[in-house]
Image (cartoon, rainbow, N blue to C red; front, side, top):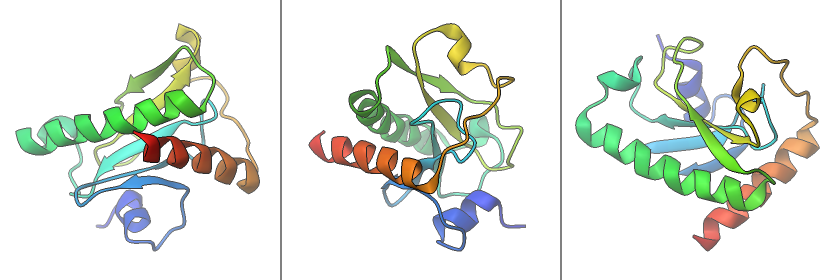
Length: 133
């Protein structure tokens, strides 16, 4: 069965896209822990991140690094935290979350409620910074 992330990649479900390559896709999390919280996924539909081939695993890390740098230039934060949970959607993915302290990456915290305008503004800032890298 096709995952929600594959449907997003194919354009069947709208998203706030940040970046795309032949093999990877990055978009804002619609239930973010912080403004700029981004998901990075391989286009290959694999459930568990550590089941990806070595080549795909290395490629997603490099792609995520570029996106994380753009987030860091666009969203006020000390760091961009990285989390891999993999329980919510059966499609490998990496969370990139702007953080200022350890509590900022706690998934038990209430999620932010942002308007579509806020999401689009954040996405545009990140995309603009990505173009500079």
